[in-house]
Length: 216
Image (cartoon, rainbow, N blue to C red; front, top):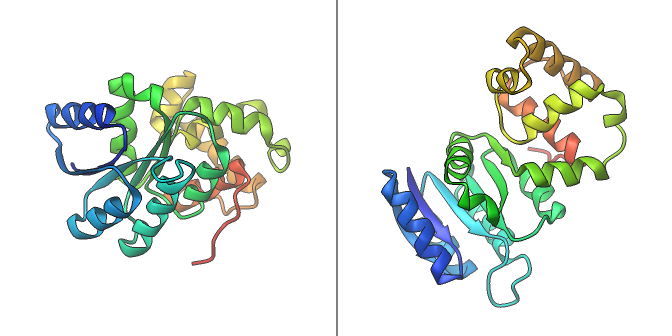
């Protein structure tokens, strides 16, 4: 994959670049601020970008704003956001912009296989939410999730993490047919057509996060 990194911590940026390069990826640019990242994303057109939520000068939400600006300039640009803490507003806002987005806590980067798996899923147009983000968001949300059974909530939580039906079946030790049925029920209970497309999976995750759905 061809990757652009936006991370103001030079040590972490170098570590990410070295790790990604070591497993066969090409790091096109490493930037330390929002403006440089947007410029690199537009000029280099990477397969995926890795962006810190907090970039200079204010270290609040510049990374997310830059990610959204980059996606406006390069529609569909896959973005994997890294954050030190769970900040659910950012996760919801990014997912409301469409598929090909991920949100991981920085601790997850140390788990190299998990990080690379999430990066691949995001680059392929899927979603990848950190399990801790999912856990905290799940405890904070009410209806319409109250309509779902406990198993359906488990399936939806894994959908939010970006897993496909076969991966969910393996992790829950159930059949693929059972997962397919649960997914259909989730779509119905969340008032989404029971057709298993990537877009409807994203809509289900948006409902899970309580995010407004943008008209397209």
